[in-house]
Length: 164
Image 1 (cartoon, one colour):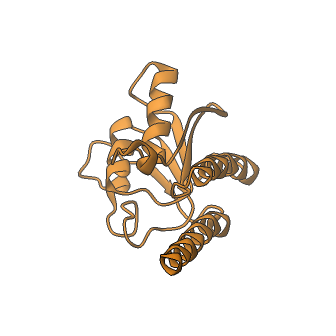
Image 2 (cartoon, helix red, strand yellow; image 1 turned 120 degrees about the vertical axis):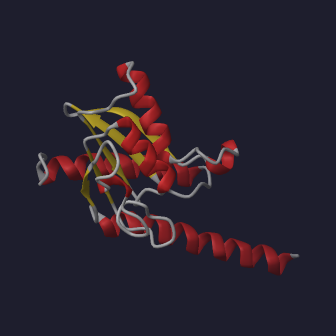
């Protein structure tokens, strides 16, 4: 059960979508994330894997790092993550290690989702921390970002191939 109103959830997921749009603007896969504490965003991130050439430059990792810096603490126990796609195993591990209270994400990721699709990292009782999970938040809006991005990418690649 969420401690937030639907309006709050939509506001913070829209902030994550704005981060995803920043990724799209630099030709990165449009995934965005925000960390919220006491009704305020304390960490923001968007995917920067290609531009930074860093495997760990996922939106969630960047938002968590910024939240850690904002609080001056690696523990994010009373914080909530909003992200536009189900996190991968690396990001799910970081969520557990940071001790985030809850996560809200858009669509599931059938190829890499480690929250409830391929694995169930955040709710695994064998780990020293579990995280409250809310999937499918603004699912269509978040999915649309990704499907549009990949459709445009395929079209660009076809065009480039024809021009060669």
